[in-house]
Image 1 (cartoon, one colour):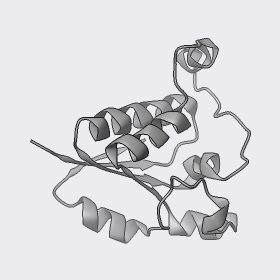
Image 2 (cartoon, helix red, strand yellow):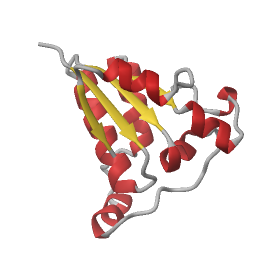
Image 3 (cartoon, helix red, strand yellow):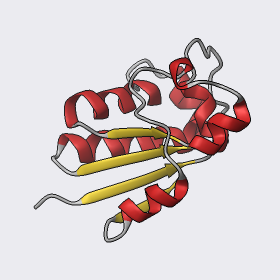
Length: 130
């Protein structure tokens, strides 16, 4: 049975982005409908050419950065979109505040979306915030 899963990513920390990406990729690969909404501090990592690493909140985040077998959160979100057809949606308000265009975002991201529409679409699904 397929479920609908909606993730809101607002944190810019490695641990939270990593957990959201793992959930999105596993759910999408399992056939669940997945939509991820990127806003606030999370969106900056999906701007083309952004080279900064997400800061760790604690020891586990540092450990993930050092381990060679842990796929990066951006790679996991990309897998979710490519293999499981997950929707990766940038927040229209955050795009306006950051003064970036849709063309400046990574190609895996879908159309800019408002929070009202995202929450309306999420009605009846499972909603998680990171």
